[in-house]
Image (tube, rainbow, N blue to C red):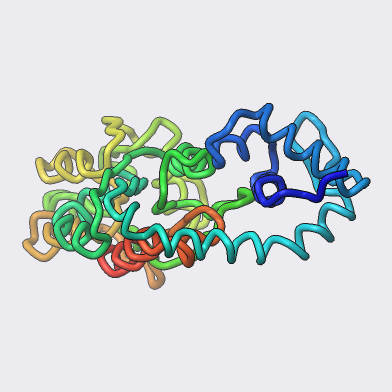
Length: 289
């Protein structure tokens, strides 16, 4: 029986981290049949079962966990060495950065020249919802994600790096009015941001409010509020200039402002092993903070 190959071990480690053959195939850029063949050959060569399979994916057996602990670092080290050796050849590969349109547009787009210079590669921004972007990250379609939710996916590494502070704001004409009498401009029908603020600050759901408009873009909500239409809850970075200029005012002053932590997510150890990913991650942390 032939000894396990490096390709088989690399596939095995990727499957352990991804939690499914399909996702591992996407990350590796091969077919699912190839991934299955590698795992079958590895199990045959070692004479042990490495995974239990079910509808939700695959789970390493005790032998699989043991093998992963023994070989994962070595496989990573070999890939790191190959990445460093091929850095000059891959320097121009486009780096895909995902995140909410609002924070990337406000905090990153004005400084794209600095970001591209730091990474020495073209940058493509991908706007979307956190869960969708994290799925794209797992599948290899995005390289770095600024996520508004804590990633809980196998094979994804994430670090918290910025706390968004949310404020309840309106045009000055609404100052002093009861909150229930001020029309609300919301991000979605379910009032996700408003609901979180109300529960955090007032300890109750946002009942009794009159929603006058739904605008699924925080920048659009800000622009609507500047016309005097009503109130909304927005991240502080988005309304700082308007507050300073007096075009908007805070209509609630909680002792502790509600916060939402942002995470910088990458695949596995890429933030350490891939120089381009490491550079763009470091610059994103600097720009958004």
